[in-house]
Length: 341
Image (cartoon, rainbow, N blue to C red; front, top):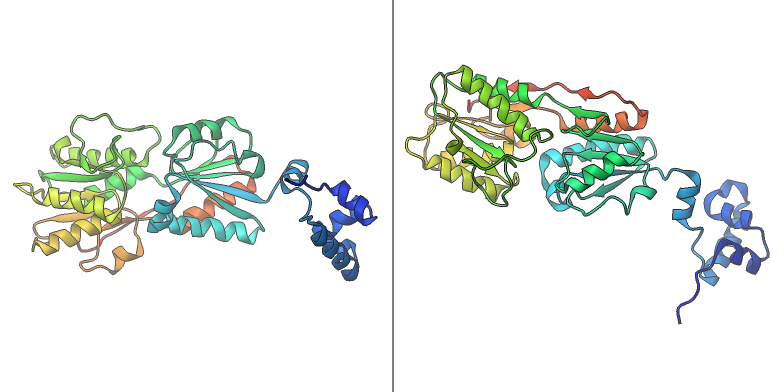
């Protein structure tokens, strides 16, 4: 038979002390002598009482010192991505110094309703894969800071992705080039494919579309034809998806002169495929990346890319959250003029 759960009042009656004494033993040890606290905790352990209900405590106090970090995608993918992992490192360093705890929450989950009562607020890294989460976050009243997308009137942290893409493309493209784009999460497809005439995903929030706009603006200024047959959708910034797109674009005849990649992971896969096919980079093919991860700086030839500090972005998001600021922040970026473009 299942035992009824002991309440604070039940335990106090059994031990012959006040409820305040029990509560202090678990939560305010400075209010009791070491010997008395040890006596209370040992007695509680003996009768099977593990302490006051944490959920009830949170609801009474109105805060938990827990901040939910809502990731754009599933947790396994996000923590293995070098850009996302550096962002998480930045967030956690600031929260740890402030005595806060971090809860990772998947952006493809069904709802945030199960955690909303137990966290002090949300930092949302990238537009959640499940749009319901964005709607719920926008409707609840706890603080929210968004990163790499905007949500209602909540403050956000971004770089100017359109300007960054424009500058890197303008640097690499020569007048009249055939240009291909290896994009990231442009359409609703679980597989690597060309965009063709498929409708784009939410252009109002996705940074991929801001980057695409920047690329297209530079192409137009350079007199290059914009051809959707030379724009690839890659569902995740992982090696296998990127490798497929790399092999396809390098097999085109005539091969594009410049290939613009929406992440360094994609660009590095493309570079390795090109070198294995003995394509001369950058003499016959120019390649650009986006993010400035450490691996891009170590490769030879060095990758030409947009450099942004994901760690600083994470720190900024956490500081914005802790300060209850309503002001959005646009962080700087630089163009790293490597050897590939």
